[in-house]
Image (cartoon, rainbow, N blue to C red; front, side):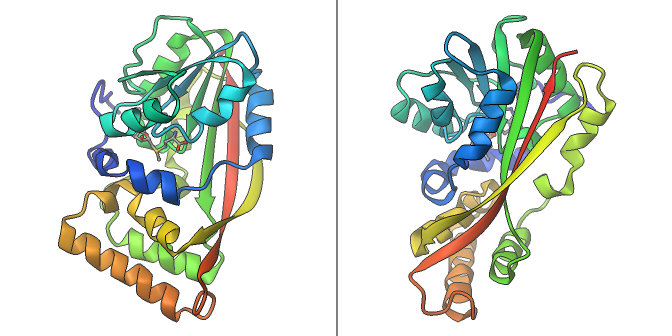
Length: 258
Ligand SMILES: C[S@@+](CC[C@H](N)C(=O)[O-])C[C@H]1O[C@@H](n2cnc3c(N)ncnc32)[C@H](O)[C@@H]1O
């Protein structure tokens, strides 16, 4: 697999249109999961942490209270601008996982929220290894919709029709680079679950925050919103409701620089 260097996956460019729906529609990470990530990575006052692919700062802002010095790296300007607006104290740099704009051995830990599946895994692991100090740790976290619930599966189906070549977290393909690498110890994992309470606008934003939906031409985009409206109005689990419970599973993964 070749490195994309300073470019990102074609479909990830859709995040340019996504900062607002991302903030409204994506749930925060659950407290227990963040506590576990922070504990396993030894994130505390005085440590230097890179939050890679930081987006609008949904993970970054939960790391700030640890007192660690945090630097955020995010390639999409509109996402980075939203982060800077709400987290003025965090240094935010343009860059990719495959070309991290930091010196060798300069951070104690690297976090990646909801994003490793977008990377060229081999190139990203080599870069993360380079910027970590000896014995530094890498942590990954994802909130994934629980599609064992029927209306959530149908909501997922509306989005899937547009996925194209965009990578899917649930495929597990992102793990292949970890299986191949000798740069890190084997991944360890903890799992959590929670429910995100959302109103109609937030459910729509959950769908339109997805990069390849956010990038659709207006007429197609309106058709997607209409399908979501119809699903919520007609599905027995959501019909007549004004707030909706979206179940999520959270996976936390970590490993150490070998
Ligand atoms: C789903 S968002 C996650 C944002 C944030 N980490 C969070 O927890 O909400 C994925 C982010 O990964 C970024 N991204 C995509 N490809 C990337 C790459 N190759 N290197 C760094 N960031 C990338 C996107 O621009 C987007 O902001």
